[in-house]
Amino acid sequence: MHDVNLLAVLVAGLVPMIVGSLWYGPLFGKRWMALMETTPEEIQEGFSPLRTYGISFLLSLVTAFILAQLIAEIAPGSASAMAGVHVGLMALVAFVLPVAHQGVAFERRKAGLAWLNVAYNGVALIGQAVVIALWPV
Image 1 (cartoon, rainbow, N blue to C red):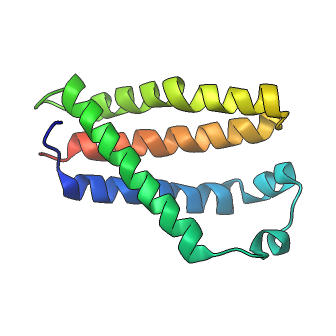
Image 2 (cartoon, rainbow, N blue to C red; image 1 turned 90 degrees about the horizontal axis):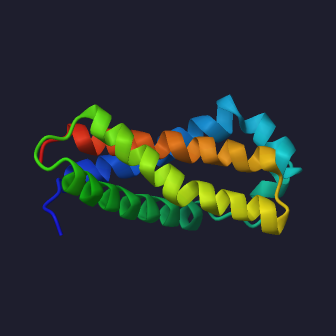
Image 3 (cartoon, one colour; image 1 turned 90 degrees about the vertical axis):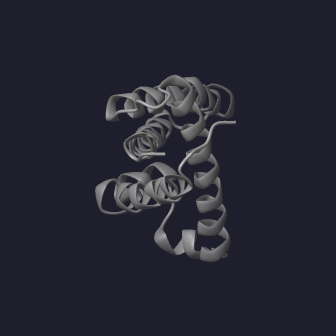
């Protein structure tokens, strides 16, 4: 395990929350709702903000920590914004795209919804990785 800046990991853990609030809100919220074939009222039924956002934040911290480990391995002591972009793109292609494809191919999920989610994950992963790469250890 590499030494990483835990403050950078904490801040990077917030990136998906910020990106998600914009992505699934003012930017693409209406499109997402249409692709989900749901309404805001249906989404609110049984919704637990503490559980939903709490677990999401914990998982984004795990993602940020793993990204920090990858950046430390790939660009030890000399990370840059481009190193962050590189690692974020690698994570997207290696982990997010295959899962999204499986959802479309085997679960018959809508391709438009999958691409909307893949794009969100790409922006969030790259954002997290750039934050980590630019923050000194």
